Length: 118
Image (tube, rainbow, N blue to C red; front, side, top):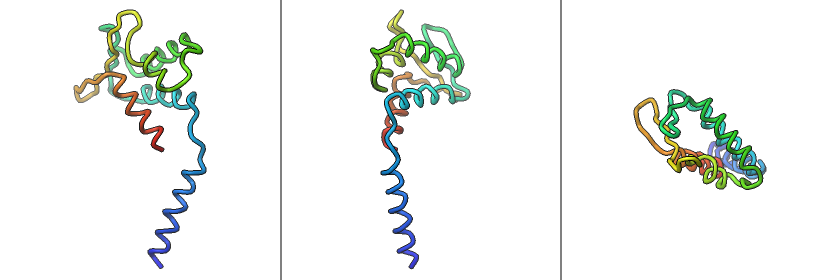
């Protein structure tokens, strides 16, 4: 009986996931920007200057808006808006509270993979 209950729970969860619509590219981009805004204790490094998570998210929103129709997918957003400075060509970096540093591209691609896996 317990095995049957577990199997039914598994199938119900799988069916619910299958029925939930996939995120649109617009929703993925919004979620990526929000994931940046939600980082606490992180410092964003852009062209040698440091910014908090809110300022970094605001900058990404502005770049997305300026990119207009050139950005149709989350991948294009990461490549064209979220990875490097258009002025200097330097990659954006994130320094976490523990001192670890990674590029924003690595961070955003990992978040995108999580979104697409759901």
